[in-house]
Image (cartoon, rainbow, N blue to C red; front, side, top):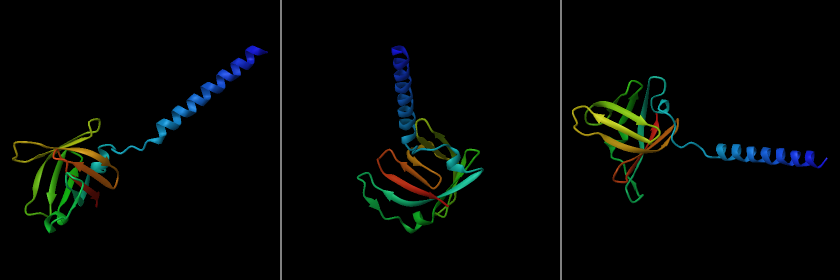
Length: 138
């Protein structure tokens, strides 16, 4: 009789541990989603909502910045519009490293941003200098 009680306790402890593992793994909300959140099915347009400087202070957007849009295409291209001139280039997203790299056409260097948040509606990009842009999907 004693062995069956010990066996029952062992099962209860195992089930309790399993429940804890499931609860812990489901409790954290994913802040940086997949590449498809950037482009949608084929393309997606993002607008700047706000700009935050490296000290954490909100910066006022210029009229040009408020009118700019950044469109990402599923084939790895992007374009900007609404500013002074149309710019195009290619982009890559490393979900594991949480980085978005933009290579503007004709530019020698890539711009690399840390993606601090990526959801269906919001993308937060942090520049190497610590400033941050908050974009919303259109």
